[in-house]
Length: 143
Image 1 (cartoon, one colour):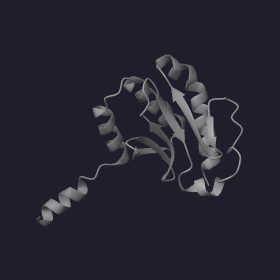
Image 2 (cartoon, rainbow, N blue to C red):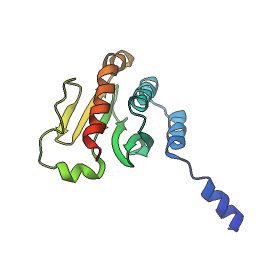
Image 3 (cartoon, helix red, strand yellow):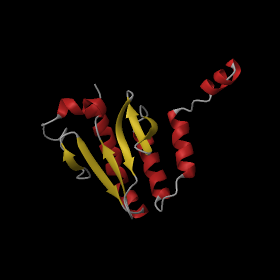
């Protein structure tokens, strides 16, 4: 490989946002429109968030730590997994990170929760609660 090819290869590294755009362009999922809508809601909820691909799905980071990741494996639904990145070890054995007044989160553990979506009506019905939950989650998990 020539030095020019190595140099151009290094500059070809895609940003996290570019990775997600490419992923979404090629995504074959019956709820693709709903997934795109939830992605937009998340990105608009907190301008500090960045995105990349993790677990073969879009994931959103705060301060370079994954905080919310799509799980696209379900049939007829998809999930958002709320987690704490490396901070998960700090929270082990404790109760939920915060009181969830929206009732949106299904707590799997004290530092991990999920939200399930089934269709566009469900996404729209949960939009305001999701925005509030994203804000609360970022506040609770940022240092």
